[in-house]
Structure formats: C-alpha cells, structure tokens
View: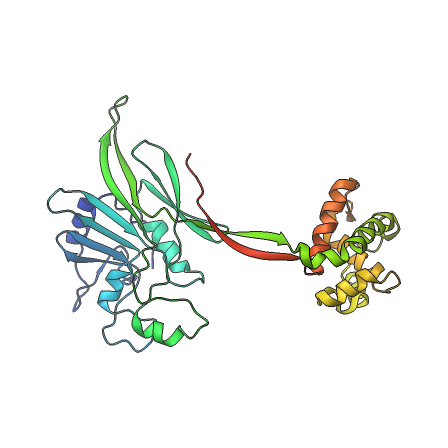
Length: 331
C-alpha cells in the first residue's frame, strides 16, 4: 500500500480530484490515493463542502471509537468550504481528540495539507505553517480536541478523562487566496488565519519557598559540602552500571521519598549523605566517549546551579505547573 502525497492546494483542485476518482465497487468511498488505503478518502458533503479524512464511518458501530458518517464529517482532519455567494474558500484543520498521540492523523495531515502549508510536530506539539496576507511565514499551534461522539463520551467521561460532546472549536481555519507577485509576476497561494489563535501549553517550574524555608540553612551547607567532596568522589560517578546501582542502594529511600531526603538534609551524620552526593554528581556528569571518563563542571557557579536543581527536585521543593501562553512564531 503506497502512502500518497495529496497536497490539494485549493477548493477547485479538491473538487476536480473528487470527480476524477471512481468509487470503490458497491460503495460511495472515493480513496484519495492508493485504493488499498481506502480509509484515506474524500467526501463530497455538498457542492460547497468537501472533507478529507483518514477513517471510515460506521452507522452501526460495534466499537466506541468508531464514528458515524456525521461524526466523521464533523471531526474530519481537513474540511474545504466555499461561500456560494462570495466564492471565498476556506480550509479547516483539526487535530485528533484526546491527549494521546494521534500518529495516523499526523501522517495524514502531513501528506494532505496544501503544498503551500507545512505540518510540523515539535516536542510533542503539533503546528501548521503558512504564509499570511503580509507574506509572513507563520507557525500556528494546533491543539488536540476534546470533542468526541456521545458513546465515546459516556464511556470515558468518568472523571479520569476530559472530553466534551460539543464542538470545542480548537481547530485552525484559513482563508485561501491566489495572488500574483507584483515584482516577479509569479502566481502564489496565501492562507490567512481567520480562526485559531490558540495559546500553547508550557511547563513551568516553581520553588515552594514556604516549604523550603525550614531547610534553607541545611540546604546551603549540603551544597557547599558537595562542592568540597566533588574531587574526593570523582571515581564514584563514572558510567559503570554496577557502581551506580551500588550507590543507588546506599542512598536508600532518600531518592524516592521527599520526606526521607529532607530528613537527610537536617542530619549531618546521616550515612546516606555521601552516596546521595555521588548519585547527584553522576546525574550531573558529562561522559566523554574518547577518554571514557565522566566529569562534572569545575565552574563553581554552574556547579551550584546544577546541584541546587537536583536537590530541589529530590526534596520536593520544585513543583511543576502548566500555563498557556500566546507565542509569536512569525518568520
């Protein structure tokens, strides 16, 4: 089964492609490319609306993830529309529903978006890139939807999942325009965003100063002691699996329990202090494949910053938060 590149660049190209495809015998399914990949197909809703989708509908679904024809059309990855009065063409682009990876949808969007667009996955987030009316190449965040059909919602919405039965409108929609470059005279295509200035989720880390207050003096002394001990422990943080496992065992529950680690901070005589420093130095170390030796920075400021980060995490002072921000990704 060949995975075709479709890249239909306008409403008229979509309509022409639809008319050129012979339906699979006994069905109304018109595959976009390889007829063996019939789930990647094109649907004519009416003269002014087509959808490009990567699933087959089932009006009597046996499984909760199966869509009816209406659901398939409503939540299609790509929808092309044309205003019958003005002739304005628009393309609507949707991600999958649910926070997990939708790899088949990503592949489909990469191959089915217009030539003048790009689909990008970067650090677990999905983006669509296009030139706007000012000929600025912009990158737009494409969030995952929470909109699912009713049976799926009833099955999963038990407090553990966050779905909705109504359109959450987290799609991107572009107005398509053809133009002639005033300098070269060459024809071009512009996709100007008309819906979807979505904020991106970013992970922020904060230090719980209230929780840390009791341990500030011990924290500082522990970091200073680690700096003094670094040369003496240089042999202990080499990339030897057996040594690392032995050190990990000596650390006991202080690596897995915030409370145990904090108790260790307050007790200068705790026998876990030395192996914990060795363990943290091992996490901080950089391995040189030529010399086969691991080293830790000799810059005191960098050392303190890196070591502080590990201690904050192991002691539970460092907390993770999700925020949503609007990023300017124009080029």
